[in-house]
Structure formats: C-alpha cells, structure tokens
Length: 163
Image (cartoon, rainbow, N blue to C red; front, side):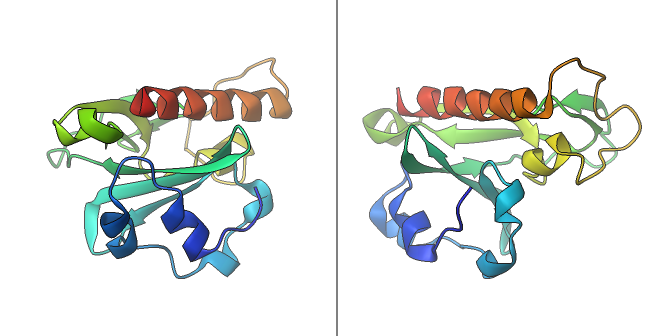
C-alpha cells in the first residue's frame, strides 16, 4: 500500500458525513507505518476505544470505513477467527460493526464482521506479528494468495457496507 496523508484518509470515508470525517481521529504516526507490509490501514481511536477505522485502496480508489467495536465482558476469552485474514486469536478478534453508507446507515442499518481487534491482519498474514499458538493454520496457499484472500475479504465487507 502506498503511504497515505491525513487529507486522503478523511476524504475516503464512505459511511459517515464529511463533518464526522473531519472530526475523527487519524493516526499521528502515518510516516512511521510499515506501508510496504500493509494491505489496509486500520486503527483504533485512542480517545474512544470502541471506535475503529479502516482505509484501503480497492478497485483503484481509496475507501475508508468507520467501525464500532462493542466491548466484550471481561473474562470472556474464547478463540475466534478473523473473517479477513483467517487468523485465530484467543480474545483477539472483535465484532466490528460498520454503519451502512447513505440512507440505510442513517436509518440505523449496519454490517458486522469478526476482525482482528488490533486491525493488524496484514502483519499476521506476513508473519510479522505473532497471533500465538495455533494463530495461523497451516495452508498450502502462497503468501501472495493469502494476501489476495485478505484483500478480497475486505473488499466484500466494504461492498456490503456500500450496497
């Protein structure tokens, strides 16, 4: 992924108003991100941990989503699988809910997916972050095929939000 600027990110949001996009928290460390290893930029809002964001170049256009991450009760640690990168974690996957774009979202409709809570799918796929014992299943897919699957799964999620 190519490095992104704050302005590019704010302009790419599909499921919030321009005013909301202007006010949301964008990472201050954009220059320090491992862009060559990222299929998408994902981050949690440090002031509001139940809010998260994803920005990715899909179909030649930068597209970004606002997500809500309902907090789980403490002590609730079951093993779950990320629907984007197919990594399993104990307590490390969260249900992320995106308001639908446009009128359906304004009416309260949303789409959910189980996603790595730290939004580091790209790093798990590449083996640059460890998900713990059993985190990555043994697969016969090449690294490039795993990356393509992750991007395709993200594109399918974005398509549901914008449908």
